[in-house]
Amino acid sequence: EFTWENKGTFFLKSSFLKDLILYSPLLALQKYSGLLLYIAGTSDEYVRPQPEMGWAFLNAHSGKNKLISLPADHNLNVGTGGTDYLDVAIEESIVWFESSLFTIE
Image (cartoon, rainbow, N blue to C red):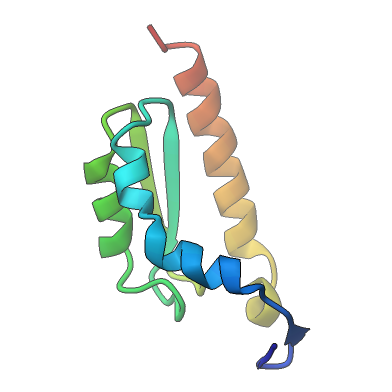
């Protein structure tokens, strides 16, 4: 059980914490060759440093990928500054997936 800022109290099972140690997203990405879009908030306080973490994921991935870097926090500033960066992320995602899905061999 833990309380996270003003977001409330959360309950995690021990299996979740064990999985954080046992599994590596970077190793999993080495086996995945499908489309990968990574959206990084350069002010992300939970996954850092950004966009360097994003580049690590893209470097581990062998398929078509793209990094979008925005000057936003982990939640794209939705809780603190409106939805402008969320709107950009959605629009960029739509454009990238539409262009990518029709060029897959």
